[in-house]
Length: 263
Image (cartoon, rainbow, N blue to C red; front, side):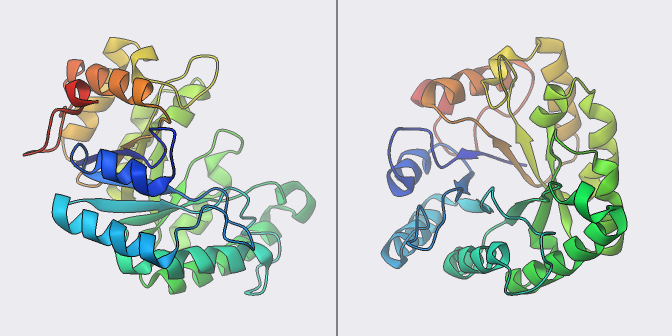
């Protein structure tokens, strides 16, 4: 299992964050939430070149979180604005050979379209995204607290895409994550970990020790993908790493600094 975190831990752009994190973690999730026609936070080519250099120097991989406003079932056609944006992100980051492209399968159109029509459109969109990614297994569908995962299940049964199991979202829903981990880990490339306080994406220090230990044991027992501590500050990452180590999780990548003390 490779342990990682997000590209927004210190108050700076993506490249300074990756330079800061590269000696400390196995993987950095490039959080590309703000891509627009002018570029937004999509890295330019010189930045991509530097990110590739950091990956080679530090045995680092990347996961890419596609923009949050993708509406992959809105139209289902290749010219849909959401899909144009997804294609730009995949094309720009392809040379980094990402471990996965994390996708939110947006259910905002579900009620208006009806379940079957929504699934048909989402299927077509995912087929396009998988083609751009070059391997459908690189497209990892994340469970969200806003929608029932059962609505997405037929798509995952029919398409050879992978899963991103967001444990923090399950905790936010008040659910036990162990049944989902048992069912979904065989197809998961990514797991997201974060605690819940007044909101989600908080330090894992907010998770009861016994609960975090159950999740750590499940992952350490056989998951060989990327576990992303999906927080957005050095303080939350530091607290998360200390909590993860106390729960029995691997505290740091082999051969790298111990992040809990190095941050």
